[in-house]
Length: 301
Image (cartoon, rainbow, N blue to C red; front, side, top):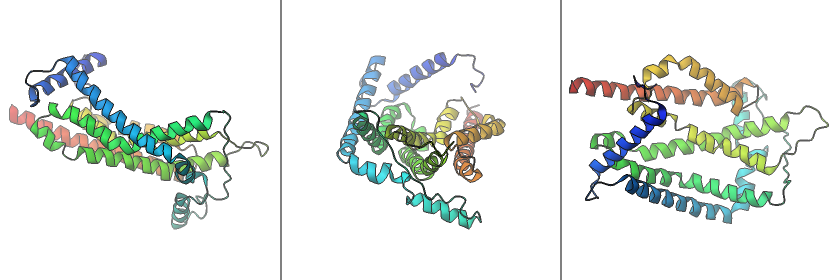
């Protein structure tokens, strides 16, 4: 919700970008004169280059040990002795559901239908792994670029942001790997239209789904921080989020059903609860920011 603004989104973000560069000019302590737009882009380019180098370093390490990573990490959810399956079975018994969530007897195998398929998958694994391990450094580079535009008060309010961004990202990746991926694997390998149909997906297809349910969820777990930024610049408010809480719940439920296509209520609940908890956390974050903004406005007037 653009607070009373009639500007189009492209125009709005263009003005926001120019305002950001002006703030960096006013608050930069290292430059003797104001930086031009090209100077800002040049500085941003070097932040991006260093981030890419960090990803490449991580990717090289992952590529060296790619076979061990595939066997011990990536294919682990495809074995019924994966640690998460024992967690689900214990939770099922504790909730009085018996063996309904115990995932046993699963037979999984993959094929590669392209001559270069496994080789290309090795590079995909290396790049994604490099991005995951380098994520805190990537955000730190981004934060170094943004920090000069912030006031001392804003810097104080955003203390520890690198830790929280990294923590939420790794928490999302872990949730996707240990919770969502096992459900995804078990459902797809257990679902069959006919006993004459043998399920043998390609490894690249499995890898693609695994990336979506790990890195994608890790990015999705940044929701509270994204709302914090949008609340600061006036695009969303706590009142707006509360007003559309029921609509958000329906969307979250649909997203959970897509991520975990099993019709089992237990699996849907596992996905829905953390996503909705993130939405409620976003409301709390936006509410605190709105109260602080109202207080500052009253003091100023």
